[in-house]
Amino acid sequence: MNIKTPLLATDGIVQIFDEKDRFKGIVLIERKNFPTGLAIPGGFVDVGETVEQAVKREMKEEINLDVEIIRQLGVYSDPSRDPRFHVVSVVFVCKAYGSPKSGSDAKEAHIFKIEEIPFDKLVFDHAKILMDYINR
View (cartoon, rainbow, N blue to C red):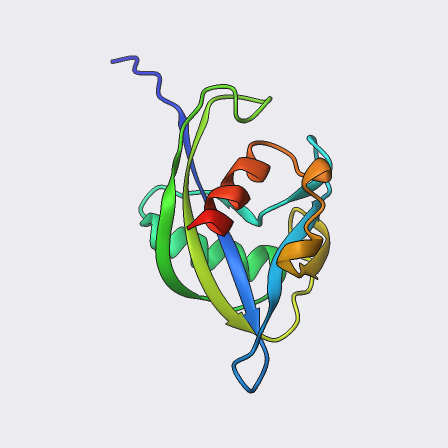
């Protein structure tokens, strides 16, 4: 049987809080690989894991933080959202403490206050995803 389906990914809008539980901002990474630019951290779901397990693993690999999933933001499936191939992403809003440190596909990891997000530097459909997050 030769079935072709989109690839499955998961992304995490990671809200960073300080030790007094005050919101500091969200994490964006500078990508090492094409397409380069700023992105919400995330990656592909491995065979045998849930999307929830995958987002926690990817956040640990890309920004070196353990996250708590707060809620699912949505599923993003536009075939043109990724210039490399058709990727469907399940996006979660997560909570974490500490400072992100870049790993795996991330060249740099930064915390941005909502009002300082550089929407013009975001890749994929991450500007739309973050606008959905802000508007909800």
